[in-house]
Image (cartoon, rainbow, N blue to C red):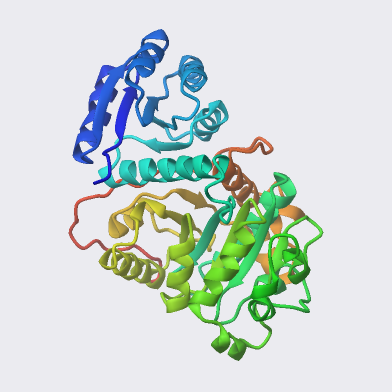
Length: 412
C-alpha cells in the first residue's frame, strides 16, 4: 500500500493555517506539523522532513519568499506549494521565482489541493528517476495547454493564436501551436501562413520523428512561434485517430516548453484525447446564451467521466461592445469563477480576419494587453506593465447549486 504523503503547513497567520489544515485532513493526507515563517518553519521542516511543504504568502511577501528560499536550502528535494487569499499575478510570480512548484488561492476545494500535491510529487519522482538513470526512455515534457470552447465563434482560435504569439514573441518562450480542430482548423489562416505540411503528414511519419528533427514537420512564424497546421482538406481528419494525435502531442512536448492545442468546439473522441493529455484547459465562453448553455452541458459531461476539475480554467471572452451581461451571472450559471476575462477589443477581431494578430499589430490595446498578461500569468515571465484584467488569476471555488438564473441579454 502506498505511503500517505506528509504535509507541513507554514504561515504566519494561525487562522489561515487552520483553514489549510482542514483541507489537508479532508484530503486524508498526513499532517507533519505547522509553523510560522522564518526560523520556526525551517527548524520544524528539518526535523519533520515532510513530503510536501505548503507555505502561505504574507503581505508584504518578502518574509514568505525568504522562508521559501531557506526551506529549499535545507530540503532542496521537497516541493513547496504556495497559497494566498489575494489573486494578484505578482504574488504568484514571486512565489514561483523563489522556488514554489505550484500556487493556489484560499478558500479552496479539497480536490484542488489533492491535484496540486499529486502533480508536484509526480514531477519530483520523475526528476529523481532521471537523475538516478532509471528512466532513460522518459524525457522531460513541456506544459500542454488546450484551448477549448463548447461552441464555435467564442474566439478560442483567436485566443490560441494571440496567446501563442505573446508567449513566443513577447516572452521568448519555446512554443508550438498545434491545430487540433478537426472541423475546420483556422490557425494557419489567422496567422497568414500558407502551410505545405499538416498534422496528417506528421502522423504519417511519427515513427521517424523525435525531438531532434520535429521542426522539419512544423512551420515557423516570424515571431518565433512554431505551428503544426490542420490539413487543408477537412476530410483528411478521418485518418487521424485519438491515439495517433496523442503521440503527436507527446513528441512535441519533448521539444517545446509550451504546447498550445486549439481543439474543436465539441467533446468528440479527439477533443477528449486532447483534454486528457493537457496539463491545463483554458475553457473559453462568450456571453451569448448558447455559449453559456453549451459550456454548462460540457462541464457537466466532464464531471460524469471524472475529468480532473482542477485542470480547467474558465475564460470569459467578451465579443461585443454592447454586451450587457454581467460576468457574475455567468459564474452563477456555470458554478465557477472566471480565471481570466478578455475585454472587447475591435483590433483583436480585425486582426483575426486579416491574419495580423493584435498582440503584434496593436499590443497597446486593452484586449492585446490582457492576452499578454495571460501569457505572463501562465509562465511567470515578465511582460510590459499594463492594467490587470478583472478577475485575473482566480482559481475555481465550487458553488452550491443555485436556482435557475436568467441570463440577461439585450433583445431578449
